Image (cartoon, rainbow over the protein chains, first blue to last red):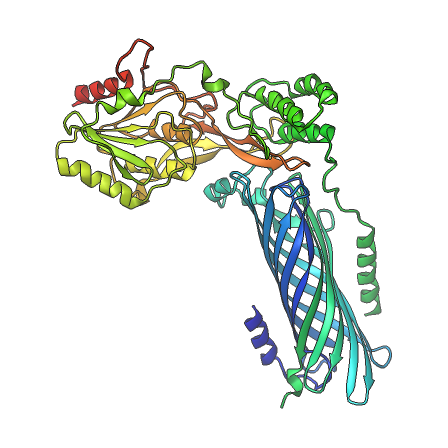
Length: 260
Length: 338
């Protein structure tokens, strides 16, 4: 996905040369908590490691008003239950494509608003369950997305503060029925699709994901530190699920538009 | 565009006012752990109606006794006593210091298995292939395969070599599969082994699952098909006897259910132990794990298999016997048919 994102962004590179960070790669370390009632009624907490990539540029001819964004996020979590008797290993990936309208109300400030199509998949493996040792998440969501960037410049140096947040609006997700084994789902495909695929909106799927970063814009490269907060929760088939994450990140950004 | 920005801002504002579901309403204390256990089973256990169990009555009987609990061992014993009311070998409470188990389903039945009686019939010391022990009986006329646990795996090569061994002797007239005292294991091994005895795809049972919290909220039945397409060997044309007893449980019960539909297969021995509910797991606030029957499985006639499956020919080893009467019945049955 990283490669695809890069290829797409390079292909669409005919953009204005600005100091904006077009291609960002980051690593994350933080804390995560999840609940998955298919596996357990308890909350599991622990360390999470992650990688993120963003590739963004203005659409051709949009006069710096409309931008696109391709992103992907990867997470690994090693999570323990409150009594330290079981563990869940969590692996997930998000990939999405967003478009934003950009305002420049004052010098140095950019506000963004738009939407994104986001695909999320995760695999959770519980260390001791019988016949329900694993649970999978698959979701596709149309997200609302907002962002802001404020840039301070001093001679040839610049410092920018970026924040972007998304929230799911509508979509679809996979959730098995509460007593349903994956063995049975496998046996009964595609007849059971109606039972395990759910339309989502605010009634059963909520969440906010945000990323705040401070960017040190150097002549050819941008270094940044930041934090990601992610809080997603959903309900279906009498079961509740959520993910809470707070992680710090460091990364590098390259503006391919100004690399000669 | 300002309107769009305003709308999106409102969405985020509204979202900040929503409240996520509580993780769990139970804390880690004896009362909450007891209530959590009761509720997990109330919502997810699949045989309340079939077994005619009044689970609210059970709660009323046991809940007041939590007040008298002084330590985790007494709490465990109380919980174990409560879940024993379900009379289900698939309901177990796992703790760091003990595991509860219901034994009522086999205690009052004959053992129907004696290795000393059995071994004197072997032509030679059994060979081992994966989870199987195999040899011949009756001077090579009967192939004998012992499968003691469906938790022990096997490969296609294991079965191919056993088949080759029986063919090498060139006088094997029938095969005995002995799954007595096999307490179960993986359903995949059950399906895989059973597939060797079918000549076409056959619906050998059904399964359902809980779709909600009520005791009778179940899905429509899903057919369970035994498919010989990928079977490593084809023994569907062989005369086959499967030996069973009350200790045949869970995946072994499933194997017997499948084999009842196989051509040329006869089940001989005692009624199986059952365990027709595929177990799932949940956990209590204190970290103890509860395993429970969640997915009821049925035979090809849509009958429950939770309390066991009757053999085609009933036979037992009585206390006065000096030989394996079940094995002798099987050998006799093979000779009669041949």
